[in-house]
Image 1 (cartoon, rainbow, N blue to C red):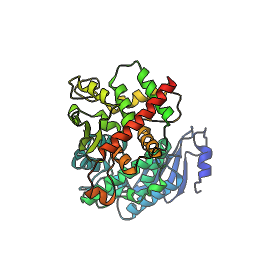
Image 2: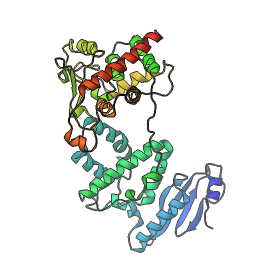
Image 3: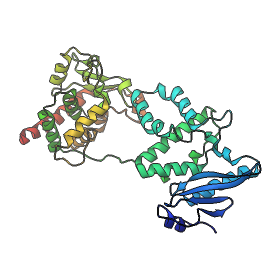
Image 4: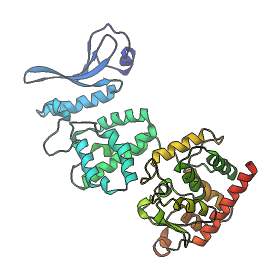
Length: 389
């Protein structure tokens, strides 16, 4: 009798007293324990002896997926190949782990540390132990679908990011002729997981003033306090300021130059040291420590996780809904646009490169216009701080 999802659902994880094995067709059957644990298996004969090969447990492996796998195993069997070799490695064919090692050693290690950390947390840590003995070229698309189904249940947004980055890994390996193909490339990104949220939160001047006061009144002595106050006023990325060193600040010309290695886009960024931030920078430089925002060790910048944890705790005590540190950037541009500041100036304040022909020929940073805009923005925030005080 053929199996059905209805029948399997009625048995799964429930007390069971029926036949311990129920067949489907083409060698597919299920083994069922008294407590209702269902395991798919493929039955065949090899060298004259009966063999039962486990495929997966229901419902993590669906009936449809089990039938697909058995169909592929039968193709091996009909070709005279042992179905046990369905995931068996052959000489010269890389496993997923070996592909990741090649990609990491020859490509990722040439990238910036922050990018390495991202790849390691998303792809490497999740995928490194999957399909341990399977050549990548032999892993069927059905197996990838099962894997990503499980990832979606854990975190839909991360599942989509994982697929995007895993596709990059496989394309890199193919371009270097390490593998001929990979079935994961057949999966459409649009069908896996959820699209990551695009931030839209714009903080008002009053909300920015509340955050400033919370930072000012925080009794915890830490580099985090000044770091986030300056982030609020400058609208810089966290890494740009967190990794800043004394040598980046020209206090004669009042210019902060972010080196390319600290910039997300790999470009050099110049911002003015304007009146409201100048006292803070002078105080930091007076410590004679090259690292301006040290963590537990004076010669090492505060790490990203500590900075994020600091602001998480701060958010818990401020009555402002749904915001994060990165919203400082959007808030700066949106509020200043409302004050009439031109887009090419706000783009430079964010550290963006201008588009089109301007990106090639116009290297002007509009530092004077940036300074005027920053001072206007800070004045607006501090006026609201006084009103709240």
